[in-house]
Length: 144
Image: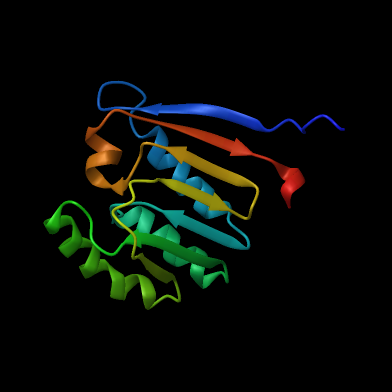
């Protein structure tokens, strides 16, 4: 049996008092580096203008983007905001899937099957600007 390969990982904290905008900038830069695929699962997908632009730019570069969101979240007005964004997202060839299961609160981003971002951060302004969040960023070039 061989030893498991080491994965480069780091914890990224964010909050309105310290480490402000680290998670948002990590997502922006990861999207800018995407070459093949972007997969996102989040219960609340209401990205700000910069994140939306990075997603659309990646799609225009030929990156395959898939987003999984719940069919219905636990906050109806979030659903209305999410639904308003869907046509703008899909107009750029980004595929959006609605999870039919009971509400899923998972948050993960996977880029090019080598970079992942798992944690507490939703893709919305409240999470990225007002909440205290923590995510684990993992990079494993052996997966590609």
